[in-house]
Length: 216
Image (tube, rainbow, N blue to C red; front, top):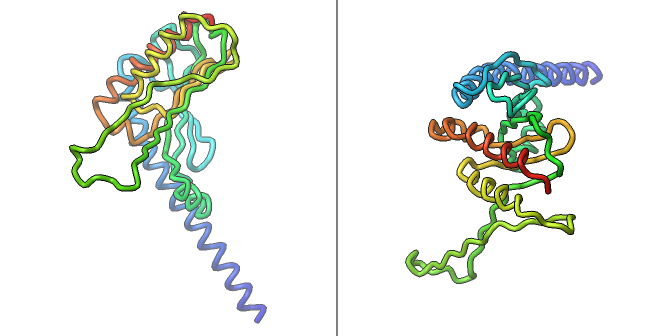
């Protein structure tokens, strides 16, 4: 009885270890494809100067950006935690996406903290019409929740750039007084679009330029 239990435990440990090593290797192979996407997205704007793994499913890519606007830039890549079965199931249950997060200090640090999250809601009436021509769609304008009593016009430029960035499908954009001053996250799958690869750096630069010019 004891012997059977020991064998079962050992077999389970071997299975878990095999699972971990297999998907760790899978993520390493996938990282090569991801690095190529990053290289294409930042071609002509930045160079990859180093890669550091922070886990089996997370790694950081250090960049040398040609523009003086961004300093100490890096890209943090979060892959699905396939190497740990329970974490993978939990991530799938929460529909967590693989993400790419660009982080950098700005030449002129922002004098504010701002967090922007991209949420989409969709609702319909209980009796949905079969004919799509009878469907009325309403689009709401962006709104801001702020703790500031004063409001300066520079934020108009900021919000215009953020609204324009919808085409790049940002999950969140953050501005901070402390380092890193600027960060933005996108779904990794978005980089599969060649048009998106061309536009992503331009949008990042536009957002960061607005932050450096604003003093609200």
